[in-house]
Image (cartoon, rainbow, N blue to C red; front, top):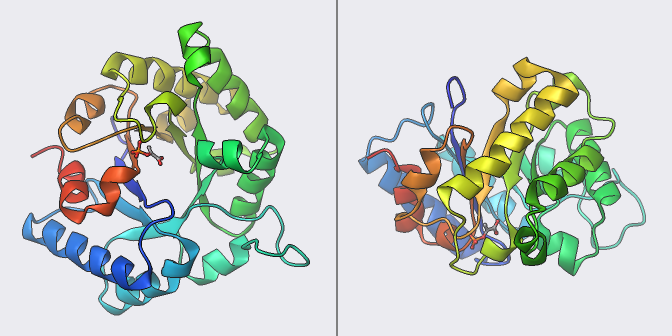
Length: 259
Ligand code: PEP
């Protein structure tokens, strides 16, 4: 992790309306302030539903909070006849730093292919957003030992057309599907194996300087009581946290994994 600022990103999924979002962000901020959290040492971000973003923006900008925020998805298109979709241009206007792309729940539940995920990555960059690009294998793939090959293929496809300059800012989240929301966390060695493979793919595609700069997160049932052992791995630079991120006390403890 030398030189890379760890990122703890809370994916709220489809939880919390805008009142609850305001409450959570305030409580998270107070808890981190109490602990004298240094946001330049461990970056903290929340990824609320679209309908909460304006409230989160108002709070973050109005109270000058150091938290970053972003969305859970975006359209590959900028505007037009795409009913129900959300443009990266709108997210940028709402002050989003990040946007999650290719979460397994979207790949599975919304039929997002690697090509669609790639188009979304390019759309994120077109609007000045930083993609948190998700990858990860299903249980059957893991049982056959195919996790590295699977993740590398997903990323190769999603990174098509991404320039070196853009790639240097991307965040990759390795999230084994069998560990998401199941309470079954990958072992630190399992997380390290794939995160290291992600970094060597980045070195192949873009060079060692990009590989050294990019943050590779682990996601899958991260909690306050297991985060430290995962963060001790050389190639793990943070966590994408689902369930545990909608409890501000638990999420703050995850962000404070060094305590
Ligand atoms: C996620 O949604 O990205 C995730 C990792 O969820 P959980 O932490 O609940 O497993």
